[in-house]
Length: 500
Image 1 (cartoon, one colour):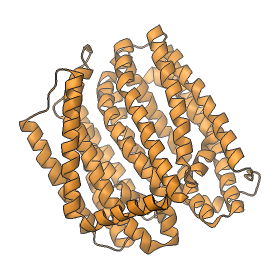
Image 2: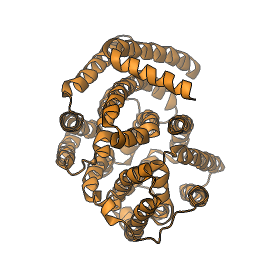
Image 3: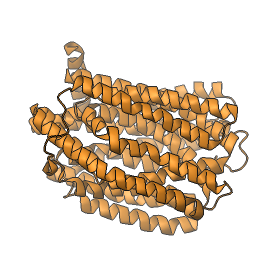
Image 4: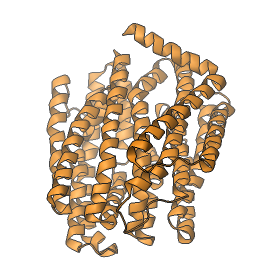
């Protein structure tokens, strides 16, 4: 049953990401053509500010998720209720503070940001953009955590998929009808209200025994302060670039950054769907059978790192020729750039390839032990980015992120392998090494013989061929360098098929 959950989680997650990619290709171009790069940059900038406000959550979600893994594994409904009650209590407190922060931002942000967009429009966008997070804290956030802990990610994926289709269809319709950007943002908030009723209905039907009035188990969330440090570091990594660009380079440069970011985030979302769909299985195995977990983790790490390099290599090859076609008719800023593709690729390779190690620290709840790493990563990112953006603008913010990620990747590999998995860190380093070498060879060939296309249909055909070649090369390398992990992963797949 758990294996079937994993299959449903991955399948629904991947299908959702395919829809996301489809809309992600259509909407940004429509948005920029109809409202301009400055408005596109404004939406992205406001979104990053609210991402920082998510720090108010104080790591409660992650701490609650890890605590629920244990409680669900033991089938203890009383413990589950007490953890949910504690989560509910903290989320209500946070929601109140979050509401005050929304009103403060609505008044301050239009005055601080330099833009030709009317201040009232800016203020309304800030206000409406914050309301969805408010709903999560007061109503459905705790239930989303419960579904993830139960391995029901597919429920969240299917619901998100439905709402995503509705919201984006509404957005496209309103753009074509010529409505103001404020009306478009308001329509997205209206659709998000449906999430509350759908989640509450499902959870109450499947878990009628849930009772939030029991005595809260605050001790189960005692790791939340250490988790907060990691979340802060992750937010700095994910959002500092846009904040610096907003303040020092302008909203048009933010728009250029976010166009590249959106395409790389599409691949990141596909990888996350795979990661998120099976991590509940890894988490429960960690607590029930550590030796089996180590074998699973070793295979998972080898496959995931190779998959990461393969997908980002394909994107690296295709993004420049695609953007040449995609940005035709957009004249307020130049989106095609020689250096941005390689810098973004480095950032996302470093971030994604270390993902399996970060999950191990969460399973082992080593938040406090690794918080110094997170603090140092955050400081390096902020200091280097601040200095670099002054000299190199958009390139500088990416260079700062890369330097911070190199430090953290080495540190987390060393810690996890030595202190949790008790194996040599060189095993993981070798995996990075041969994947990175293969990427280097392919990128050199791309410089010598760049992929070009004058039309979308030609680009699609060339892209499919390039993707097949890249996938074959990485699969072949995996078979050569990771024979044991490759065979074990193949055995697990065959065993799953027989079980089903």
